[in-house]
Length: 461
Image 1 (cartoon, one colour):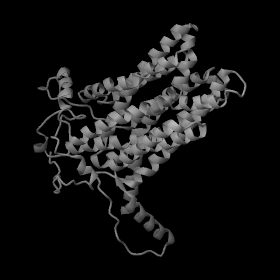
Image 2: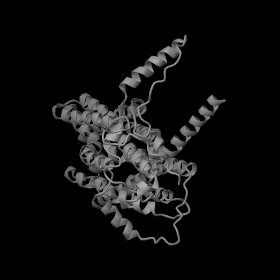
Image 3: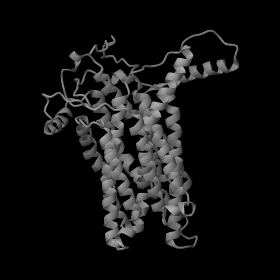
Image 4: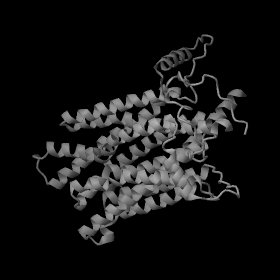
């Protein structure tokens, strides 16, 4: 009976993880269309390569503006549909509209070259803002729904869904969709944007339908002062928990490398292909098209490596909320499979590292891979470099969010006396001082040298 109950609980948790994070797969599918094929598409419209980088400035700019803005507004939202759901649905509609405009830009402008370029650029900018709004809302709902002990598993599932979205997105880009699905559009980008819009709409609908969200009930005496929330955002930057501060600093420098990798990975491989086949005959446009397909294939391999890493690496990490799992001694079994499993579990226990350690290792791998691009001149080697970066990408989409989510949920679960210094942190206005949850707590089996080894009693509220 106990075994049946355990299996039922695991099945329920699995269903919750899938329904909660499947919208992230749809979002990543749409983003892979932008990052993988946006640059070649803009170049095909006639935009100069030197100006393309200004278009992709929309990514970090929209993230800088939209993610904290959406966090504040959704934290204080009293909509009867929930705090995050209105932002999820609204940003999804905006993203779908932008995808449709991008796919049919030439048809909308009647073929006017300058107007076509401007409309495509504006659509990409609006889509970046909408995607960042959607991403912030989907990440926030994971923190809202799951307890601290399941934050790592939830973000690991989000990383897997990102891998699924990337694999399917880059696979669609590699296939000849115009011949396979001619009823969806007359160009490759039209078919891609149609599929991406459909996938995004369906996956978001699944998440919104199966994820319960309680509306925020504001006390009658509490004023809805949005300006106060914005002021609290900037003042709290100086008093964030040390874990979150360090995570933000690392993310700042890591994404200086990730943004050009994502937006120019396809073009990088395509340029190497064109340089190697410039004397093969055929028009320049045909050679560039084959090069773009080679770049899509390389990013597809990168996505496969990322998906595989997101499935394997979480088995070799432990979080602060759960701690390092201890292998329980038991009677020896005569079953060969049971003995093999015990040996494998012992090996896995010896190889397990903390979340920050896994993150540091992935950043070292990414840095070395980027240095190898200085001496790479073949498409095959470049594709392998992109595949290796898939390992780091899987960790980048999982570990930082796990660390922040565990910290936020851990703060919210502390006794009220420890929550006296109020500042906005995802949902509840709760903030601790820098010494409450130092990074060492996560690094050293959940307890650092300067941390109190006594467990914190659960809140009775």
